[in-house]
Length: 203
Image (cartoon, rainbow, N blue to C red; front, side, top):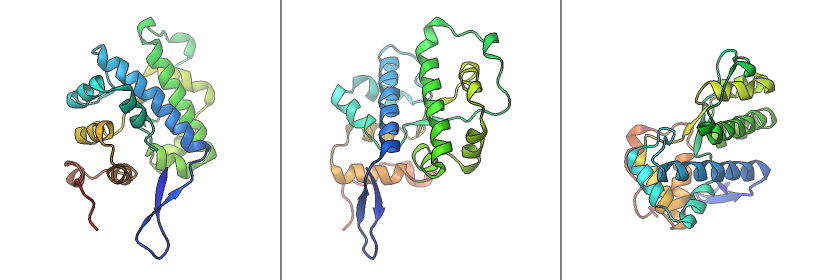
C-alpha cells in the first residue's frame, strides 16, 4: 500500500494497490528468496553490506514475507547502455542460471512497466526519466543478452545498512509507514538517511 497526503489535512491516506503494485511485490519475493539463499550459502548478494547480509541470513520466513511485501522495489535496475552482444555468442555458467533467470525476469518486468506506466516505473523502481526512456526503446529480443553480459540488477539501498535491518525487523505500523515514505523518495539523501528514523513519530 502506498500513502499520499490527504487534501486539506496533514495525514496519510492509502492508495489502493493495483496490478503493478502486486507485480512489484511478487518480484520482491523472488529477489528476497534469492538473496536469502545466497546469504545462507555465503554467496554474492548484489552489493548488500555485510551487516545486512547477516540479518538476512538469520531472518525467519515471516520476516522475509514482511520484507517482500514492501510496496517498492527492493532491487535497483541497471538499465543497459549500448547494443547487446548476440545471445548465441554468450554462455551462461550452470552455477549462475538462477541469477540469470532472476535478472531476465526483473528486467523484462521493468521494460513492461516502463512502457505501460512510466510514472509508476519511476516511483516503484526508482528509475530516472532518462532510464525509463531507455527501457521503453530497448529491443525485447536484446533483454536476455544484456542480462547474460552484465549485472542488470543490484540491491536498492545497499549503502544504507540500517534501512535493510529495519525492513527486516520493524513491525510497528507507524514505523513501517515512515520507512516507506523514506524509500519512496526519488533519491535517499545520505545526510538524512545515515541514521534510522526515530522510534516515535512526532505528533
